[in-house]
Structure formats: structure tokens, C-alpha cells
Picture 1: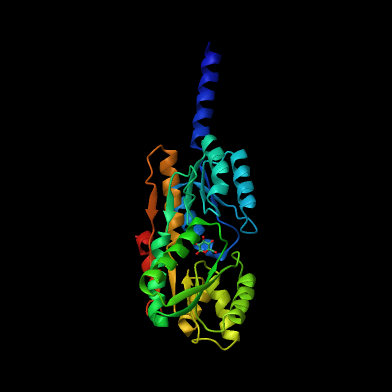
Picture 2: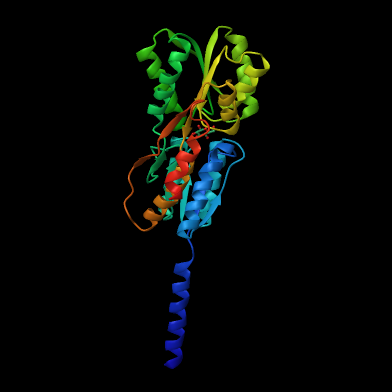
Length: 310
Ligand code: BGC
């Protein structure tokens, strides 16, 4: 009898230990890309605060099957939560359903998958941000002329929404401004460079280039600089990669729209932990954007991080 009690006690202690294992939360970006570095910084910092383990699993290329494969592997490993930047909406529906069925909490950050069972989207309100980008661009081209758009893949909801907002603003506010090209540069700087060169050839009257994804501005900036077109073609777009900020400082780039990437990562941990604790999640969390020009390029980052350092 005594032996049975001791065994039961040992088993109970064992179970208790099992329960106290730190949760494993995984960030899955669209693919390897510097844009996601601050997202993961926020994810890691929040993980340190809440005592959870985190991992980062990035596909080599922005390709849906690679993202699906990563999630399948995480399901097999029974991780506790996944925060994914969705490369595609429909293409991820089955694997997100599979993860959900396996009791893994899945949320989207940066890029939503609205048709999927992901519990929540944390990020930019993309249509509105695309609209705001066009509103900031139009005065710089006197509301008229040829505009080209660079986009990293044509399947992601976040980028398509930005394009939609950009296009809507042009048609509402500047009927004489025209989108003459929308190029898929697949999230790669070398492809952006090639596509920009081709754009300049095909559209000698181009007045502006607007990038709805992060590599667009630095890739196009390199081409404009080399061709002596700095200042002749207006260049602006999403994200605050270091080369984009350098372009703003030296006048090659008019403005950028900085997303609150650190905040996306931080909140992803908090919301995954809420989901694990069976707390309800809001469907959408707007992290907000900031328009960066020469005026605030050297101060905005400190302001953005303030709320997390208190
Ligand atoms: C987007 C990301 C994308 C990144 C690189 C950002 O603007 O929010 O979804 O992966 O650009 O293309």
C-alpha cells in the first residue's frame, strides 16, 4: 500500500513537472528576409518576459509549399503556438485547419489569411495603409503621370490589399495619375533590380515608383542612383529597411511607410499565450503605421519602441 502511495506521489510530481515545461511558440515569416528581424526581436523579448521558448522557421524562398511544409513539421513536433505571416490565403487553409485540429494555436502577424482558421491577425490595416501611401505620393507628382508598383508576390492578402488601397486613392483623387505596371519581384532584391531596369526601359515617362513590400525601395533606389535618376523619378514605399532609411536621408527616397514590426512580434507572443489559456482573442489587432520622411527619420524608432521599454 505504502509503495503504491509513493508511486502515485511520484507520478503526480512527474505530471506537475510536465505541465511546467515552458511553451514553445514559433514565428513563421514568409521566408528569409531582413524585414522580419525586428518582428522576431519583439517575439523574443516578449518570450523572455513571459518565460516561453521561441523559434524562428523561415523558408528559403517566398513559396507557399515551403511554408506549408514548415507548418506540417511543427504539427508533427506538437509545438504550442504558431505566428505566421501568410504568403497566401487559400493555400494555407488546409494546413492551418490541420494545426488547429492538433490543438496548436495559430495566429497571423504581418499578413493575414482571412479564409483560414487562424484565431487573430496582428498587423497593419493594409488597404488603408496603401491608400495613405498614395495620398502621400500624389502631391509629389502633382497628381498626374505614370506610376509603377513593385510587389513581392501576387498572392499575399496584405500586399494585394495595399495595392487595392493605392489604386483606389488614385482613381478617387487623381484620375490623371495612372498605374502603368505592377511588377512581381518575389521578395528579392536582385529581381527588384532587374524589374526596375525593365520598367525604366518600357516606360521612359515614368514619374514614380511605389513599392508595397520591403525590398522594393532599396532595390529600385540602387537602380535610380546608378542611372542618375535620383530626384527625377519619385521613389517611395513600404518599410524601413536600413537602405531605405539611408535613401530618405540622402534624398533618393521621398518617404517610407514604417510598419510596427517589433510590436507585431511582441503582441504575437501575448496573444498566443492568451489563446493557450483559452482567453478569447480579438479577430484583428491594428498595430499602426508611421510615415517616415527626412523630418522624423532619426527619431521615429525611439518613439516606436517607447511603449515596450516602460
Ligand atoms: C510585408 C511583408 C513582406 C515584406 C518583404 C513587407 O512590407 O509586410 O509581408 O514579407 O514586405 O517583402
